[in-house]
Figure: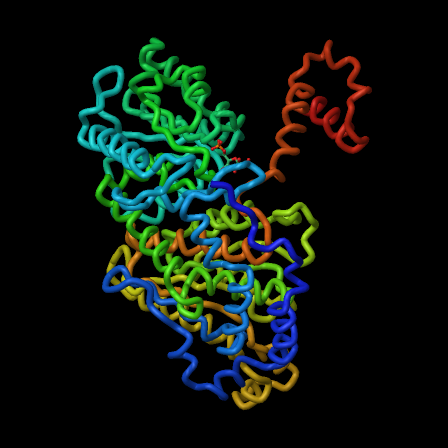
Length: 556
Ligand code: F6P
């Protein structure tokens, strides 16, 4: 089914945009202190729960610089761009990625087995569940020790070799869910083409007991192929027989031909489809390393979490729709307040890689300047997304969030229950900081309050906090596979919401191509022998790049 963008007109010229512009002018001078004074109930009215019991996530946006009127106007904007229709189009397999001529059906990866979602007239759900069943059977064999290495030993080390979406999702989720992972399997993630990455990993693995997963949608990514080749050479150097590759290498890819050309038996390949974007693929076969670590039932729960958020996004009214509100609040700041960045601050050490994961999800999706109908965008698009876990960040960059000249809307993510309990006072202290930070950011401390504490007059301006720094609070019951699936899906849909409003395609990534083409050419220039480089004076680049290449060749 072909699909055309819902809006081809300039969003900045629309009536809802004009209404939001006027409303922003009224709201900008107002402090969160005033908003809370005028409506003390906003702490209750601007929060809701998605899911129930142990699987619930609360979303609190009371400390955002908005009112219920703002939410109404943002909902009008969502309706103006037919967000509901665009969600339906995406989830039903319409071609929502027109520059690559395909759907973006990550939601089909977590659809129930009786769902019907058609691409080119074929229901893709049975194929999704077939792959899941194959992955599950393989994972059980590895986890139980039935899958043996070439010398007859069970697997103890798993190395996922991939990059971008073929690395960040599984690496982030494995770390997040380490408390439910099988401790007898050591998981490693190799991504960087810097040889230090793979060398460091191979140094701690035993080739007889190592399984390498080469994860690449295209199976053409140079970093991944270079790292996979190093793993292969390491294995063969130790085991001395090409036949060992079959016991120690599996592939996850959409490209069977290239997998076979690399020397991996396609019987040991787990497939997915071109309608799964790399940064939307952790819930596809790309999640194999995660499934090996946490087991197929927990992986099924992970998928159920995504599905719960998909259904919520599809069905909930905008004012109680977590991903839609996250996206619309982001639009509010990006376009009407000119705030250029968005911090994600998990109060969970296990979510240390979550901001990095979201960087790819958000910035590769919405880092766009061209609309779906080929015009230059007339409004700002994707924000810079960044963050680190609390409380560590508090002792590093929070100073700027509190008192710097740049306002940074922040998502605080925390959990009611800890994943580890070493005794002592850890979790309540962690969460006390979590609540304290959003309160301090919103309300600050006035000069009068500081002076009343007896602070010396000359220090009062330094110790006063302006406040009015916005944040959302996302409070889960516990960091389980299900909750993590919900969280990831919430951000996927947040990104989609924004893309629909901005009229950009969040599913392509042409901006990464030029660097790849240039790097291929430069690799040949770096690898050329001294004799072949004799004409190095005529390098084809600009004078800066030419000089740097020559200098590198001299120095190395
Ligand atoms: O270069 C960017 C990118 O294409 C990402 O979108 C993708 O996640 C990553 O490279 C890895 O791609 P692949 O899975 O095809 O190796």
